[in-house]
Length: 112
Image: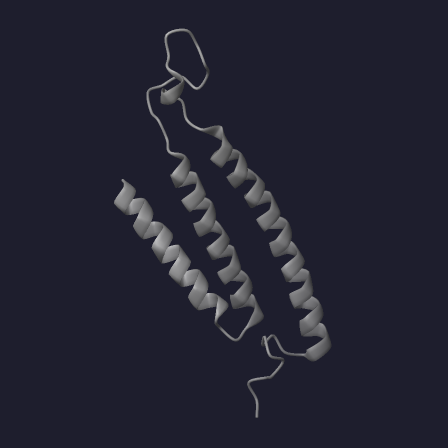
């Protein structure tokens, strides 16, 4: 399972970096979102997941068997911040497109 998770994180990261390096702003935004999701998946994977154990502390259960809630809280916070940042980027993209008439990152158009 760890190999599948590592491959998924690697593919998402490489696709995100590739899209960030593209010349169009929409592709850059999608690349940033993919990179954000890859980092969230990495943090969630580092936290670990225990199965067949109760989620609450009860008598007779060792504390070491419980899942660490801190990475889950970090990922939840990162999802909310990433959503707000993506919304802000989309507003900036629409404003830039309206002002320049192009959606290229450097402001150039396809026509020469």
